[in-house]
Image (cartoon, rainbow, N blue to C red; front, side, top):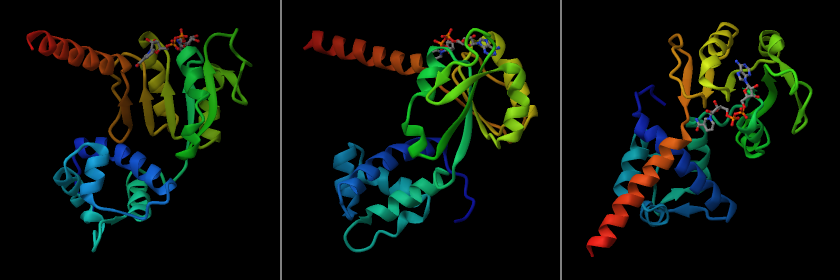
Length: 215
Ligand code: NAI
């Protein structure tokens, strides 16, 4: 496939397509038209076609798309045909919850290590993985081909820890700390702020409330 620049908005929609197609595949559905997918996902068929055209259209022939083919191709685009080793920095509530979530493995993300600066947490078991002290971080990520780090620590320590991670070969950071990280070019950072999603919900709730009152 040609290395065409795809907008982040399109990339942001791919996981949802992937999820729906995975469910269809599991239900034994072999083909689906853009119209049917559109009704299922509540997005317009033209949006779906436009999104898929970024990747050559996925060869819609005759009746609709081949579900398994589409699922596999979108998986490849998302890099899910490879496995990724990840570590979690911060074994608090959030870090442990993420470590305990099994579904990441299904997508090829392998939970290899979890680190914390609090000695009281070192040795604690998180789904078969023992919490390690921060002193072991560098050696561990170099020796275990870790490519992703999940940052679940407060913002105060996050910048320094991110620097250590990058210096030791981490290629991508899934950042839950409430701070913008400055990383060298080529290092991928995905910031997650659950409260952003909650604020969006709050906006819709207040707007919907107003509409109801005015009716
Ligand atoms: P927590 O207090 O349960 O856990 C934080 C852990 O990080 C503690 O075990 C602490 O010892 C460790 N830690 C702190 N500084 C460290 C450092 N420099 N190196 C290694 N370990 C360090 O907190 P919780 O609830 O797990 O949240 C973690 C962070 O994530 C918080 O700062 C919180 O603001 C943030 N957060 C972000 C969310 C988001 O959507 N982005 C959602 C929830 C929490």
